[in-house]
Figure 1 (cartoon, rainbow, N blue to C red):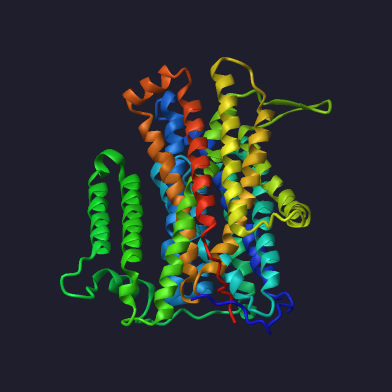
Figure 2: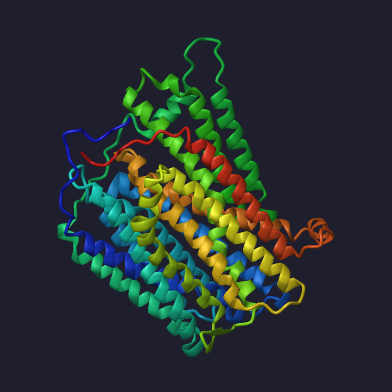
Length: 527
């Protein structure tokens, strides 16, 4: 399934002129998403969850936030499948965008209704999740072998515009929430989402529309099924099928834990266990599919399974990254918000600290491409995609060591300025640029043509799993025995969790680095 570009084809073509429509759409859409996401936790704590005991309110707000984020990154599975098999990327993006707009309207209307507001969150998770795996791959569809060298520039611009929208949303929406109330603060992102949808529609006639893949007798799922079910010789065992069956059994057991775990944790855990065990089982018996399916299909399945290992090892990064909008805001609420900078004194709203992340991204992407990466290359340290991702996971761990130290100071009663959060934000953002921006291009380039939407969806599913780790850890520290053990260590519960996540990411970075040395890159851009 390896598809290297032909030697005689030089990637010197022009930049596709339809790209500005997609970039502008993404900038507005990201403003709308981050505008509502970054004020969600403080709104829940201050307004919607007042019926919850004050001591439990922050924990419940974190639970709602990460449950919402799991939905956002779960529904890409649906959107990717619909686009790849039935409607194509553009149509799927457009119709899911309208659902997205309806969700924003619900947030603005039902600011005091828990049921109405949660329904709005569901619509946003459904709509934004449905388009999430498709916009980046839709960008990739506009390129072929003649101009693919410009794709990296566009993917970086794509990620830059995401953070351009996120920066202004993070800076302004907390002010609108404080000064004008939830209906205005949630209404403005809805208007931006409607504009994003209209911008996308206006470029419809200029896009390259890659049609949905027809029904394929040698599709990924059919090859996997053959590999698991076929028995080459009488009496020969099928250990891979046993592993897949074990996965199905533990997935059912996970769903049975719904009353105690909650549906979201139980269902997502079941899905992860099933995918992991079926994937492992299929890889154990994949050669049995040869003869029934052509070699190119079998090799394609093996390539996808290798990609999924990379995605799985990235999940600890997402468990750290998404908590900047929950755990880090809770920490910032306990800090001194008065900041003195060059003789200028001003107050920072805790949620506004998130504006540092997109601001630093906009600085770091050009710095890395123009200064850092060329310098490393000259030194003989080629910054390949997987090396960048390994370093990014490690930097995220360092960020959490810093916030853990800040939390220890807060727990001891020391006054800590909110400005100290700048350092962990800088480390986490460097990690994000190395992992997330790189991962978008990696996922597209490694995905076979017939599975680009689904592979991008599985890339985003890694974020769901990352948020699942957060919910599991948060549920674990509610256990009295666990709390007693943590308190006996002399470290507060929140600081202990921060150090735990840092260690989790460091371990993942070490394993990721080892696997990266064995991974063979392929090229699946259009011919």
